[in-house]
Amino acid sequence: MSAPTRPTALVTGAGRSAGIAASVVLDLARAGWDVAFSYWTPYDARMEWGTDPGAQDKLREEAASLGARTLAVEADLSDPAVPAQLFEDVERELGGITALVLCHAESVDSGLLDTTVESFDRHFAVNARAAWLLIREYGLRFRGQHGTGRIVSLTSDHTAGNLPYGASKGALDRITLAASRELAHIGVTCNAVNPGPIDTGWMAEEHKVEVAGLTPLGRLGVPQDCANLVTFLCSAEGGWINGQLIQSNGGLG
Image (cartoon, rainbow, N blue to C red; front, side, top):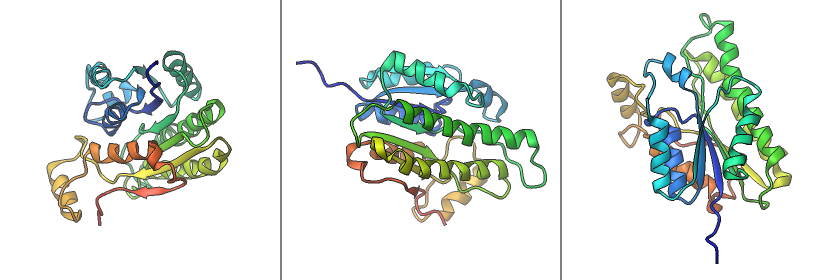
């Protein structure tokens, strides 16, 4: 008797070992999934944290050690042609995609008065348009058993001081909620998770202290906290949760 086939997940935005997406990739692999992931090094290169050389190879090796087949694809999601190509690459190597987890983001702080048109458009291209195109591609291609499909997007309620990011994440919320209804005929659940501020290396020490003090549990959120929920939502046990915007932030006040 052949071994049961592992379902395949596609996780976007896994450019750094410290990021949420990397924890999601490993947690899904641990739970019995094959995992493809995308990353975009030029984004990390222009951010203050910089690139993480070797992170993709390390992530593939760790996921493989958990029994997963893996694929890493560098993908510029600001290009509207890329989502379809990304699906082609994953399907060719790993087969049909059962779970789509959207962790990618453009996030550059700016406010109402100083945001440039270029920055605004880039945020919407990556955070909203690419999410729509990836979800659309998923909806056109999904051939799994009714009720097994999963889409999870990571969102945020940031607004003031981070206008283009927050506004584009608001659009992402609406796209995800629309998908929960419009993809009902193929049996796919779609949920958005707001993890709050997660310690992925971007917070200054004083910010960490402030955030921990606002959380009833008295600590910062870590990537594994988010990965735990994403893996549950992708599981059979999480299949009755659909069309929800889930706050998973430790009760942050």
